[in-house]
Length: 140
Image (cartoon, rainbow, N blue to C red):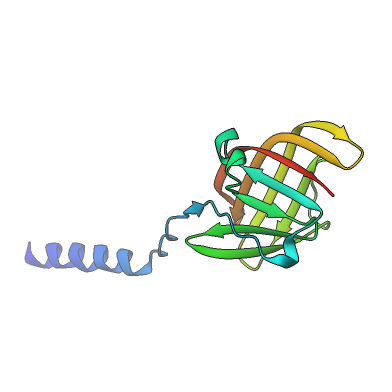
């Protein structure tokens, strides 16, 4: 009986050692400060009208680069046209993440300014880590 219990104990310990570590929780935070090189033409994404009025961003793009804050770190992702996507969707990638900014309701207000509603999605290793409805505005 002791031999059987010992075998079970070693087997369960061995399983725990061989299991992959779970990734740490993904925490997306809002921000106000945008680096000068990302100012100008681009999209500003917000979680709510209140955030928009206070200029509190969840994501900022200049069409070539996107800025988000993950786990209290500023992360820059580069535009990636190689990944298949919808017409009103922009894809940005880094070594670890894929960011999708999908605009589902775009309202053109003049030749260089528009507002939109949409969804941002953050993926890693093919898994969706974060998905959130957003509102935004963009142009030059």
